[in-house]
Length: 113
Image (tube, rainbow, N blue to C red; front, side, top):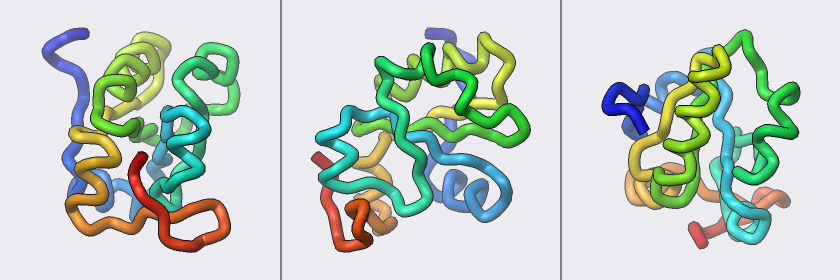
């Protein structure tokens, strides 16, 4: 990965989400099912290449995983393919530690798996 990978902390991510940014969660289905950010879209890391056309090109894409490693790889790939992509530093662990909501699909409280 490059040293210049676009990265945001959780507070900057929350601010960007108040605009037109998209939060892309690239964790595995079991991790997603346990809990995710309410506004996130799910696309597991192994499906990013095949699902590239489903990722919006007209908005910033904020990429998140559990700790930030998988999302960094996806962010680098998206940037190389012309997306305005940003890695969420610390991933869902940092998200939850900052007191941001973690929910299951039905809206009930979730957890970071």
